[in-house]
Length: 323
Image (cartoon, rainbow, N blue to C red):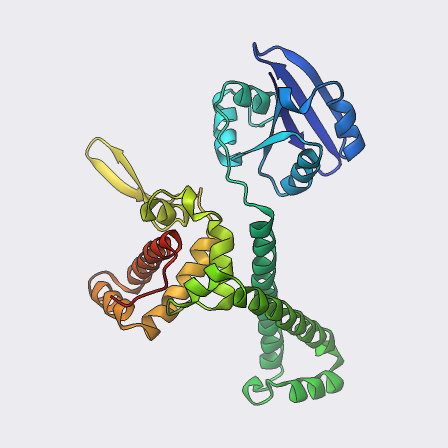
């Protein structure tokens, strides 16, 4: 058996192949394209090699190419591989380290969603980014109007903004960008509604107060296969809503866990706000904790409770029940 680590960049790949004893068989840098990858791996059958790549921003391209060529690919957690590299007195996780971790069975792996989940992630994250950009542009327009002494509350509609763009060329570009983002956002949301309507798991989640078409798809996309979480606590930890504990002697304190799914954490936190307004069960739970620990702790507690219920709903394929 042979083990290959690939250090992937936008224009090039540095790859290292080791045998089972740890001897370097090949170690080359070559252009990032399918033909160069095939040439590097030439002479090694799919069955006698495993390949490791880091979960960087461009992992999906190289992963797709390698899977099309029939190779077994493992995705490494960059945070954990970086910590290992630091212990080896180097600040860089290179192809040789990846190959060695794979060979010794110490590679910290990352879950790879299937194509359907990846497409869901793409569309829901795209919708979220569009909304964020539109709100940023809207804030810039409002700031401009305030500096001009214009009360925007009376003119914040399509007709009034179009008139403003005609009268004031300085704001015209921003307004055009705003409407372009808004139209794109509407189109993406139409696609999301269509997907959610025909997806059984999404309809299960939408039976819970506070969860709609967009949030149901984002939750499903970020969770992936619910079976990889053995308990609700694991799902809560994955969302970063279960703080880590640092303990040394008599000292104990909460620490932030950075190895979390920030998208899942964000969307379930957003849903928890609506849930407290729509459901008496969540509302009572929220106010009970808020009185003692404040609204932030209470919101997180509601988010944790929602994730616990979501775990049971998806695991048992049940709709939400307020009991």
